[in-house]
Length: 494
Image (cartoon, rainbow, N blue to C red):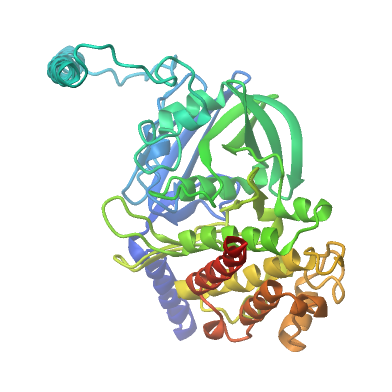
């Protein structure tokens, strides 16, 4: 063999071996986002769906152990099976309800075992549950008599059937993660929603206001070309302990068939004020409301960035696409962070950095210098957290501009509105941020207000060219909390 050919073969072998790094599997893949007949991930899958009498089967991989998708029931129109051995899904088959698995019927003894063993186990489990329930009921009745002299217990409204969306999402009904409904219930919820009106459109698809049991919910419908973002958001939202007042509340995720096509739904809480971007267009702020908005955003970002250890823990998460359009304003004028389709996760225990397989990039206008110059350390989780801080500084600037000082307030403008076009290119932003090292101009009037002056200092410390020099989310949170307390003291004195 010629030396050049041998070198080429050696490089090919090395590239193959590297592709299996970090315990990833090679899986058969035929979905549109795959560039070849295979992909690498943590889990292989085969899915099958039936639309208009036509059956389509796909093979691919997940970047995380997203077992919830694999535990769903196999229905007449959709089903999924997963496995965790290299190329195990190449020959893996799945049969929808009504399909017959020809030539693979188990022998009669095995069939009887398959039927009666689970049935016997269920009967034993039911008997034990009934016994435990009876004992508990006896104990409660005895305790109630001793405390209240045999008076009847008062039932809560939620027990009587007046449950609301909040009741359904309380600790008694979640998966234990507090992230949303149990996976099987998610499928039921998605089919009970009526779409009412389209409230937003973007490159990912559309957002609709839907109604479920008389209450409004938000339904984010992803376009087929952004399927990976739907997978990623579903992965992130199913993370343990992600539920937080300042993170958009997740309800369910589902694939559903509408208008003869498959739609990818992400169902979340609905906030009628819309995004912070929309809210700032129509609302002028005072110092107090400006600080409240900024504080709630940083609280959400701190919760994302922090890793919570323990069996019911949470990995550290960096958002990677923080901007005013991806922040929603709640009815109490608090903000919550949305759109986790580009997020990355990191766990110190395993030292595993999960970047995902999404080819989408963030919003150019909000990109940090190291991202625009392509010098970001992609193997270091701290690097992604620092890009969130840069973007938070820009969002803080947007909020501060819309805050009145002595009756003066500017119209809403996006960051760098005066130096780049309305839809800036990557090169436009690179020249302004990296070459010219410009940052948004802070209006002079802000320095005449003690709160806004402090916020101006914070945003400038978010915009250092060197990522390591920028503030941490926790440091910003403590600074804004101190500012809030300084506002409360004069009120108490009055």
